Image (tube, rainbow, N blue to C red; front, top):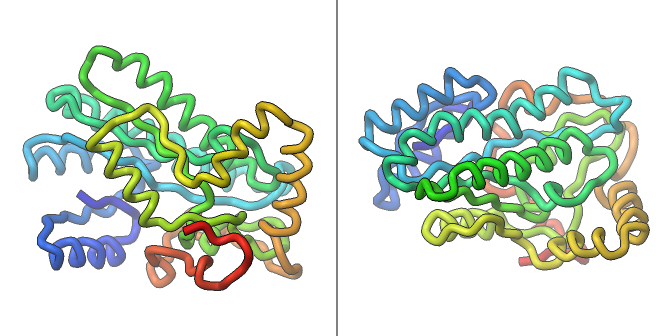
Length: 266
């Protein structure tokens, strides 16, 4: 089952899956709508009789200070990134209990560390990890495994799709990992569950760095965001794809690693 807002992009992915010998059904879904998530789970059970694995990976991104990010954008980021995963878990759990299946939630390295100018996104990812850990404890002994993936900066179009209230161009913070690497980690956890998995060795080191040397981390993340994460000036305000998808710009990767620079992590 494939779910996202863009029907045309889903159809492309489903066709590629079928061309490789797989079976795929596209179900256009806004994960921030619990009724649509319930329908997705019901459709999966109707078509395949059971659910053995459920992956919640939908996410939107917003750049801007706490004061300058509009309420409606802040709220929408939380609705998609956090509540979308809550709704998914609640819809899938009855079926996962029957199969002793696995639930995979997508967090971020930002589930463990903060950064300026992306407070809505960081808040949502901190909350995802907290939710996942609470749910994992509630499900001990049930046979259902809860896994959280914490990717480092990943080469996807999310930065191009970001809502932007900074007046500057949003860039991913280096080094980048490939989306294939994150996808492989998700598949591994479906087959061999673990509570948390960090993807990306270099950025993963910032988690213990902040614990051991918070003032150093603070200086590095502020400088990194202001000089590497935000570049150029004169960019008009944009809602990005926070409220509406843009199928024409949906791609597997964002092309950032092909643009050179000192920091691409393969």
